[in-house]
Length: 188
Length: 188
Image 1 (spheres, one colour):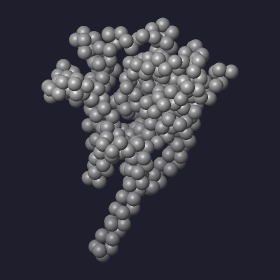
Image 2 (cartoon, rainbow over the protein chains, first blue to last red):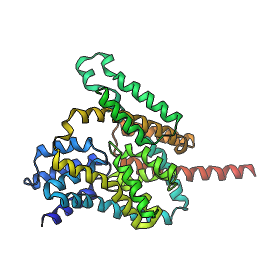
Image 3 (tube, each protein chain N blue to C red):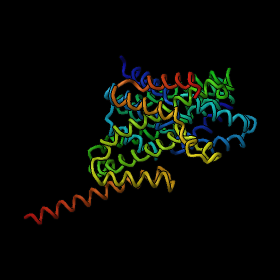
């Protein structure tokens, strides 16, 4: 029963990949060597490209894609449900206890440590987004010219959008759509 | 509107317009869940992100489950999670069925380059907003800087940093409590 197998395999991936979407990647390579008829290594490369260029969490996108290749429309749904099932179970339990011990001084103290750490991790993620968005690391490594390191058109757009965000209160979706349009028109 | 429908649609909006995984979702989650709906505070969102780092699964899904479960119980958690994954499922299914070379189109790449710039500005804006809230003291600032360096330079896994920071929060509050008590004694 291929759907059952798919659900079970993805349940395992959901359970053991802690952190972001890229954490599921090693498991997908493992899956490919376990079931070579499901999809090829080439499929994985294409899946990564598609998952990075479509909205939504990468892990979920990859799961839907794998499921589709293996079992068509229902396969996509089943793989995704398998991926999120462990998260839902674990988080529901954590949320329950968090509600119960919300006023405990120890939980409160632990949270005062978690929040700055959480912010720091967001900052680290910001650095990697900046690398992809406004720096041309590869070109700089090739040419060694410092000016090549900065992508000035991208930096100007980033500054304009940032100032708009500070001054106004427009929805993030607006900026995503505008930036996509500018990217297409100016051939970023 | 029915709470479940509201949860589903809100998280579908978040899932449908987030590019680049968990942290890119932060500005959208704050806009929708904190500013617009008042479902959670900024502090709570940072807690969810921190806990989502150490529990299995994709961070975006974990955060959705947390918020949904807080607003409408366990079923709310499931509904919010299905909302986040629904747009992924639709989009990826269409691509897997009809346009497998989606990521190779130049238009897609240009749009994506523009979107990445917007995501950078959005996340930067969120960091500044959250920084004021998440770092209430000098000690919190030091912890934040420490975690940032350990993650970015030393590449310590995020889950370990979160657990360490939680313990640090507890130890710090005990020490601070003790110091307060001794200074009270000295006053007498």
